[in-house]
Image 1 (cartoon, rainbow, N blue to C red):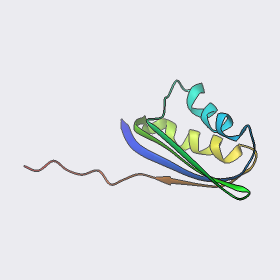
Image 2 (image 1 turned 180 degrees about the vertical axis):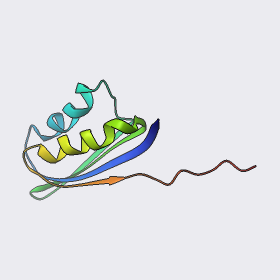
Image 3 (image 1 turned 120 degrees about the vertical axis):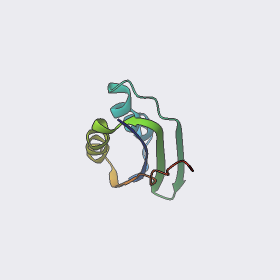
Image 4 (image 1 turned 90 degrees about the vertical axis):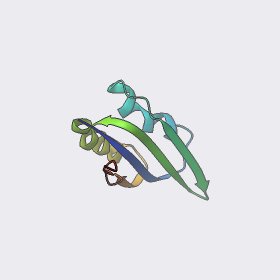
Length: 86
């Protein structure tokens, strides 16, 4: 089973932050469909999105992201699945 998921993160700004955030995906041979980041002072806001992530991996990746040095907050967003019109 696959799901559409976005991870929204706030972390302390540091030069090696973005590669560290991609490691949990690379370890599982997953390539994010979209990654966006924006620095605001001492914080970096990051969005990492996958259109078809194995559902069994979502909580594992979220846990890995929470363990990255400097990460203050991780929010997982899954849009509701829409049913096709009959």
